[in-house]
Structure formats: structure tokens, C-alpha cells
Image (cartoon, rainbow, N blue to C red; front, side, top):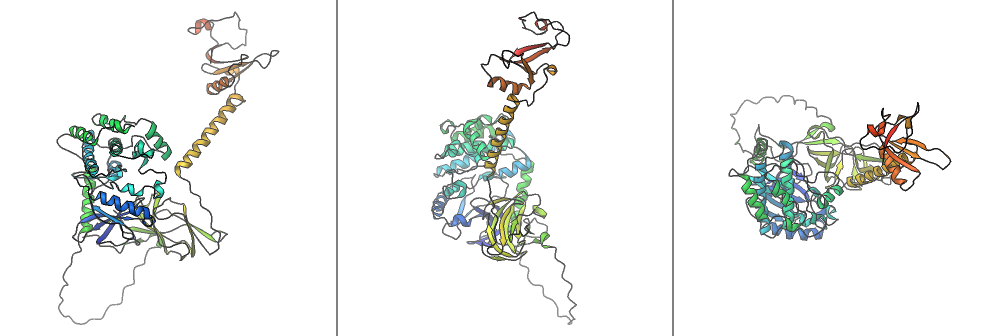
Length: 569
């Protein structure tokens, strides 16, 4: 829960916005208050999607279906305006952490708590499926943990992104670590797909990691489709039902009703017993929400007795403001509540980094974020204050960003014209990366090429494999890693090779890995023999020093000879 950024709206429809709750691929989420005083979660669609006609049609259809969903374990859709500019959606607000936050801060849940969590989520999915809706993006971030049980949020809305946003141009929707195999293949996702996601979520709650590990997207989707999940650290109680839910074939998974009954039987009569740390998080969120949602107290003016007129004192010198890079700007939003109660995190303001180049352009790079945002390595672009072609001056607000530690207003590092923007609204950028260019009209703007992390990892892996092959071939066939045969000892590998019939054999030794490659490349050549040393200089011959050894000649070693007991590779 963070303070509103200066560019954030203060009202959406009839709802007054109080604080920021987060941002994602679809848009931004705010804490709001209804005209009647109820706290709600308000999701505002980002501008790029709002201008997409296909998205608007699908969004309206999915919102209408989601409004029919009820049940104890869902965050119900209470209002929406799909024709607004931009469209928005309102759900009931649950003052609690997401499952991802709860596990990250307080550690994995116990076996009974995981079973109770599974029972609640299965009941929520049952209510969702009963209305003909499939969640499609069930993950730890879409589960809110409350004191009276979990809540499923964002159900069905992911379908509106299908084939419209940059996130789903491959034809799939979801978070790779928690997607079902049929989703990854681009097939139709039904209720069985949500069961797979539910089982993956429970594995995360029990271990703190997804059942298919982490890493680049390409590696994750391969493991989900082809590899078996890692359930070695799962408690014995929920392990069988989680394993059944992660079956590759949809028909092999238990239905939601079976999942619910088996989890409820494991949970015991006390229901969901949360760790103490999670309860403290819930209490903290509840207190902060009440402080923000409380209407400002209207105190009657105090009546003063008439008094003798007095001269006004000289006005005091105004306090000196800090430098812009360290200034903390309060939002013009609502008051944070009575004294002593928690307020949302303040918005920071800091100047972007960048120096003018010889070509007359200043690259705008995200700076290290100060204050409460210190330590963030990535930030999400929330909103640009300027468009390409607009004039900007130094220290003028340029772009709002949001990180895991708060919101920040990035100001311009130079005067000039905004020539290029490399990261649009909703994009994620690494701290220190160039996101825009400022200069004089006609100045040469440097090209900034961005690669996906998965692509970089794939290219790096290919380079490593190629380098390993080159080293392996050089080590096997060339002089690299070769040693003196007189230095060979037990466990080393040696080669006896005859260059031609008129020359004695050449003896060489190499690490066994390279020698095995050499033997493979020379397979079938009877003039070359490759062996592994079993014993060196045995005092009584190889036949009595090595078990199973039989000597085939009567050669007697002379002084200075090296005697090796060898085993053919």
C-alpha cells in the first residue's frame, strides 16, 4: 500500500482513490472508498489496452461473467464501467497479504495449513466454475490470505488479454511457473487447468518454491510440459493430492469436488491456522486500511473572545527545502488518518542520470532510487508526463515509476526536447538502463536494443556449449592437457598409438574425460589403444596386485622402466 503518485487520478467513477496497491500487465490497482464508505479495490486498465477495440469487447464480456461469481472464498466484482476512458473494474477489498508475500516474509505453511488453504481455494474455484468462468491465471500473487480464509482474485479477467496484449502474442495467458501443460501448448484451458494451477500454488505454500523450480521462461515451460514436479520437500499429508493435481493429462487430475473433500479431510476441524507472522501482517494491513478509509474529522471552529489588536510579528524565514534528489513529495491525496496511525509509503523524487553526448542527445537512465525505495533493482514505468516532441526542462517531472519499495517521480536530467521513449507505460526496466532520450530536434538518437532475459540466457547457454565442444576437441585430439607417461598414476588414462609400422608406439596421458573422447573419435583403429591405469609399479606383478588381472606375456621390467597395470577403455 503506497501513496498516490502525482499523476494518479484522485477519483474513478464514484470511487475516491486512497492509495496504490500495485500494477501489472493489465493496469494499476488502487485502494478506493465508495460513496457509502466501503473500501474497495479499483483496477484501472492501462491506456495501451484501453485503445484496443478487441480488448474492450473481451473485457466487457469477461467482466459480465465475473460479476455472477459469488462464494465465501472469492473477491467479488461489485462494479465496472467497460465503456469509460479508461475502463475500470471494482472488487471487494480484503486487507491481507498475498500468498506470495506471506510465504516470502513468514516462510512456508505447515501441512495442515496447506490442506486448509487448498480446501478454501478449491471452494472458491468451485464457485467460479459454477458460473462458467475459468480463472486461467491462479498463482500465489492472485491469492489473498485473510484471517477467515483465502480469497481468489482476478478470476476470468486474464481471458480478456488473449491475443490483444504484448504479454500474450504467443497465444497463451498466465504465469509460466504456474501454468498447466495445455495452456503452454495453446490449447483450451478448462476447469482441469485451474486444478493444475491450484496444486502448483499449494506446492509453493508448502515449500516456498514452485514445483518446477525457477529460471528462464523457456526452461520453465519445458519442465512444466515434460518433467516431473519436485515434491520432495512437501509434507506427507497434502503430497498425494498435490501430486495428483499436477498430472500432465487433464483427465488424470482430480476434479474440484474431490480436491475440496480430500483437502478438507486433511485440514482438521480447526480450519486454516495461520502462522503468527501472517496474522501480524493481516492486522497491520487492516489498521492501515482503517486509517486511510476513515473520513476526515470535522472539528467546529473555536470561538475566541475579542482581544486587543496587536502588531503582527515579522514572518519567520521559510525552512530550507532539501535538494531535489532527496525530496520527499507528499501526494495531494487524502489525509493519512489520525496521528499515530500508519500511512502509505511516501512518493520519492529523484533526477534521472545522463550526460549530453557529442551528437547533442542526453540519454535518460533510471537512477538508483533513494530513501524507502533504496535497493530496488527494477522499476515499472507507471506513466510518462511528457510525449515525444514535448519540451522539457531540468528537474521537471518526466516519468512516474513504481518498484517493490514504493513510488518514485523521475525528473529530467537536462533541458531540451523529448526525442525518444524506449519503455512505454506498464513496461519494466532495470535500474541504470536508458528509457528515453532528450536533445535538440534533429539530434541523432542512440538506438537502444532490448533483449528478453530468456533469449540472453539461451544465447549464453549456446555459447557455453560451443566453447565446451571446442575445448573438448582440442583437449582430446591436440596437445592440450597432455602429460608425460612417466607421471601417470592410478586413475589416469593413457594411450598407446603407433604412427606407422616402422616406429615405436607413442605413449601419452590425458585426463580421462578427454581420453574417452579421443578413444571415441578413433574407434576401430587397431593401431591405437586407450586404457585406464589400475596400478603403478606393482611389487609383485599385475596378476597378484590387481583382482581379476591376467598377464599375457613374460616381459621383465628393467631398471628405470615404468610398469602400469592397465584396463582398456
